[in-house]
Image (cartoon, rainbow, N blue to C red):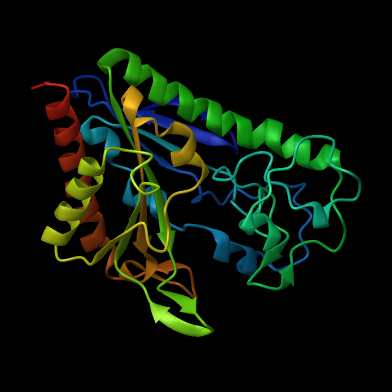
Length: 289
């Protein structure tokens, strides 16, 4: 693969190597970054902040360019600023002064998990002070917008070239969720297409069928339906299909130590098969050989 765009500490965009047949497919990993900026100013331990990362998801999908797809990953951590939130999804409880722009109300922001996280591990405050408008705007302009702009360019380039594009937004999830205060085991994969709004449901079903054929359990739109990136780029009536994929961390890593375990290699091999299948699916949809 070849590195097309590299912004130190922000993002890296990979394309297939010369000679590899191109597919109208874009993969992105917005939450796997761990390059912590010097101005973060957090007061909680770094190990605790790392719980917010989708650790090693970028490694799982790193070989997408070998199958003909483009691949984008964020280098900055999700806890610093979250590229999968709208830039107006501001948690006003963490501000030192009034926010001068519109505020998009959301359940996540109310929980302290908005564009800039206020809390980690439920109730632990990341900062010991309120943040200024200038601090937040600097993060938006230097990290959030460049990621969105680069992903938009990648998607639009393939949409213009092929008339359709398939965007796969890659994430990981904890092994258990909670319902009424009780832990609930999660499936191996959760696919989110915002109830059919962000991509053709046939694509969602194709991915689900391929994963099930590999022996994995799959849920669709529960408990994750897809967030800002698939909402922004999923325009199936215009040929732009966006699907969010969540993979259970227990399949490939020790969640407490944030280390890969022996299951990583097998999962990576199956992810590579899925990537190849998605690229073949996309090329068949546009009539390419």
